[in-house]
Image (cartoon, rainbow, N blue to C red; front, top):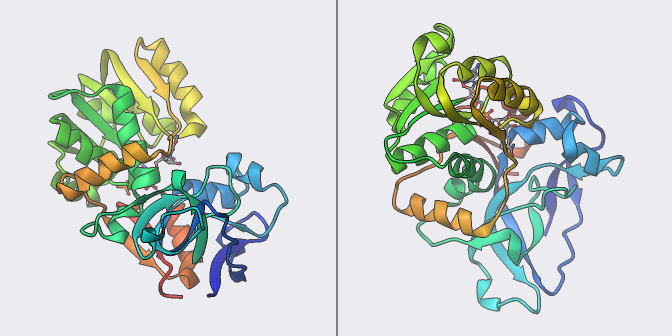
Length: 318
Ligand SMILES: NC(=O)c1ccc[n+]([C@@H]2O[C@H](COP(=O)([O-])OP(=O)(O)OC[C@H]3O[C@@H](n4cnc5c(N)ncnc54)[C@H](OP(=O)(O)O)[C@@H]3O)[C@@H](O)[C@H]2O)c1
């Protein structure tokens, strides 16, 4: 067993990402050892790599650190207190938030609160993005209390969280107004959006109005402009933490019900999303599958903020 990992030994640009061989984690009696096949790239990984946010605070000076939160793979060893029938089962899981031992590695020990055993018909690459991006979409929608026929605007609709948000809102029966750039208009329409708006064409406030709920996955000036499309006393969930205070303040001044959110990784809601996946109500669009040796290129793409669906690391191709 060789635990090949993508590590950082300092914070910085994508250049600080290196391949290394780490010890295979020691298994405690209640854990399983997973051989990771896919790790997902999320914007928080790039922020942590840059030395920003709580992820970087947790790492402090304790290098090497392994980035990455969610993963999918196969159980290759079970601790002595774990049901041995789990051996060889496929799972989707996540690293504990606040851990410096992430999912960009071949072997990882996880406990039963950190993974779900997959039904055979769910593909590992499809499941890998559900913890962070899938749950963020689902919890934003839940927090907004979306209902059938609500007019919901999704800002950042073609990205990781956005493409799940469009599909889940469409499944509820909402009227979905998806906002993205011109090259992704057909993509978001195919996901179920009734209207697809190009944010570069004109200010959003000139393109849409009377929105019941805005799910803002972009924040900043784009998020502030989108507030103008929301009807009086409508609801706004603004997801990027970095600009949430500014958008909440402006939205409140406008009389909107506006709040931020922090994703809560939990088993029951991922199981709900897996059921939707089995029913073919949602799927993961994989924009690109990178080999670990191409991690620098993958992170450059990640921080461009123009991902279409999700970026995955294929840990089987080391
Ligand atoms: N609070 C939390 O718990 C939490 C959880 C997950 C994610 N997040 C944050 O939520 C944000 C979205 O995450 P993600 O994974 O979906 O990111 P992502 O995959 O990088 O998606 C970015 C998307 O934003 C679109 N975009 C860029 N500029 C835009 C603009 N001006 N107007 C409209 N769309 C624009 C891009 O569309 P085009 O390519 O078509 O331009 C792209 O599809 C990130 O800031 C992330 O850090 C927060």
